[in-house]
Length: 58
Image 1 (cartoon, rainbow, N blue to C red):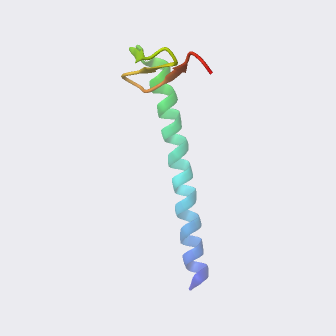
Image 2: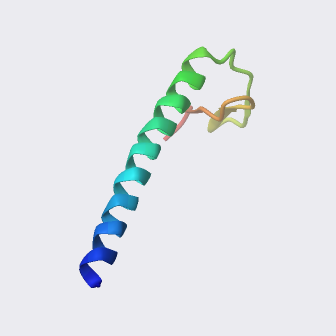
């Protein structure tokens, strides 16, 4: 019984990891094709459309 449950959890984990990779690719595509509109302060700027952040000071 525990082995079946463990196998199901492993399958779910693999499916979630695959979905995470897909989402990361979508984010990268969105950020590279976005016509950025930045707003922020003197330390960092964030795009209001895609969320990419540029740090101005460390």
